[in-house]
Length: 551
Image (cartoon, rainbow, N blue to C red):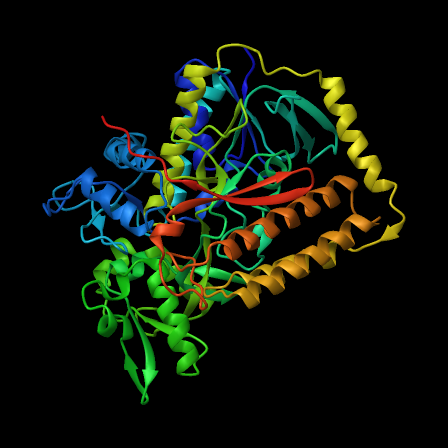
């Protein structure tokens, strides 16, 4: 039986590989960088699980209700219920693997408040939870690697998917980043390739998550869902041409947002939303911050952490404080931090069902590249949980269903088709610049898909992307490999699908806020936005949200 090809070595990929190994199935963990440098390492605040450490009456059911409410009715209820039900066991397993979660004086797993949740539900390891969890899973993966059940191929990039004539996935084409050689690998494919940061440039995530793997799947006819749902984190800071995340943990421990009004601090979220204050869901905080900064003519808001005790800084926020001192050149214990909303997370992605199957047979997706758990807005603390649970569930589905080697396609035929695509690019007569195209793509997407959108901004973005796509396909950039130009062309197509999805959703819901359609319209738009690429054109449609199955 052929090994499962996992694209991406972050938490979703690691979780899947370990689960497959435990079930007796070998996998190949393929990534452009080692797992130690995956974006999962950058997650700071924590992971949600209804452990009820503080006796507040929390439960998986309440976690389910909060997640569905934050997602504004667009999340798959079957997937969300399974995720919230498994969360306590997932966290307990992580603790047994050695994750150094903070604990109470009684030795229980400590929990903090996070946005949109009334309960202390977020388990954390200081303010570097992602790093701790990733390290623990890497160690476990090495155990299975030593037993021949996991093969790691760092510094490899997915160039294309191998698809059969009837639309099934038979494997993928990879390039070795060291040797430059390309080759065909056959077997079922699980995409755990992260979010679409590379389409926007300046985000809180790594631009190593280019969106290229998802774009290759989209080009192969795999639909994407809810691409317009892009989360802006309320508290990011500008450093070195990107946005640095100031974790929600800061507000969970008592940090307060303010603007200057009449020369004095105005804690606007506490006045506008007295119940949750600065811990309202992220889409609400981001919109209010952007709106008020515009109205009051201020470039940033301020995050006031000076009221947090020295003990809380030392025990729970030491990493965040060290980051601020090193990169922002200020101490948050004594001075407020200038913050503004920045692109942080992509709720939309490849369309999968509750079992993490895409519509293409033998192709699966999990983690941030898949659309499922978060709907129109993600709760803080649910990203690590969704990645871990998603990788685990995708592996379970493969173990239960992938029993025959019926996904095979002749490697020679796949290689020949790939070479033909590259020859077509090499044969073009005109010239173009992929570097300029990358810059144009990022600038266009940030302008079109901001915190607030309108038909005017979205149409301008769509027109700019159409012009860019035509320019790239008309010429050849001799300074880059043909496969790199093809990847950029596909990413532009995926970006155009994001813009068109936003144009078609003529309402405001969660992270998608339109000035020209400010009301939420459940009768027409409490549905999943589907984008599909067929015959060189992108089609946008709406699909009903899955009904919750009785248990």
